[in-house]
Image (cartoon, rainbow, N blue to C red; front, side, top):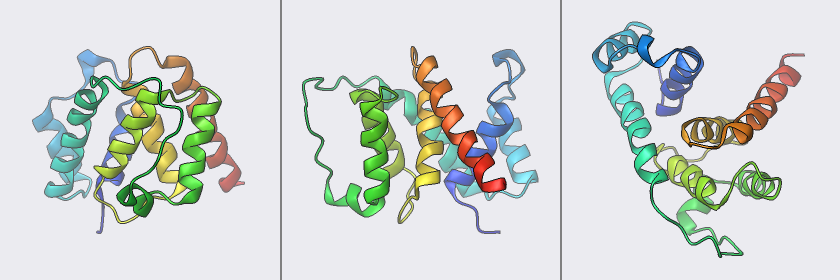
Length: 155
C-alpha cells in the first residue's frame, strides 16, 4: 500500500477532528491504530512530526506590510498555478492572512511530495486553519468549501 504523509494526516483529521482533548489517544496508541489500519511506520512518524511542527511555524512573526508574495522556485515546483491562484483567492477573501498563508506554504513544502494538487492544498489549508487560534470563522468557511467540492464530485 503506497501511502504518503497527507493520507495519514487526512485519516487523523477525519477521525479525530471532533474528539474532545480528554478523549484523544496518546501518541503510542495512535501510532498502533495507524499501523493497524495499514499506514507505514515511517509515514506515521513523518505525519505526527508534521503536526507537531505546525505550532512552531505559527509562532514565527511575519512582516504584515508585504504587499506581494513572490514564490521561490521550490514553491513553484510544488504549487502549480491553480494552487498559487487559490492561495491568493483565499487571502483576498479573508480566509487566509499573511501568517496563515505562510504556514500553509511551509506545511505544503514539509509534505515531501513532488507536487500537490488543488484538492490536497484545500485539505492542508483546512488543517492549518484548524490549528490556528482565532481562525474559527475562516476554518468554518474553508470547511464548507472543501465539503461542497466533495459533494459536487460525488454527484
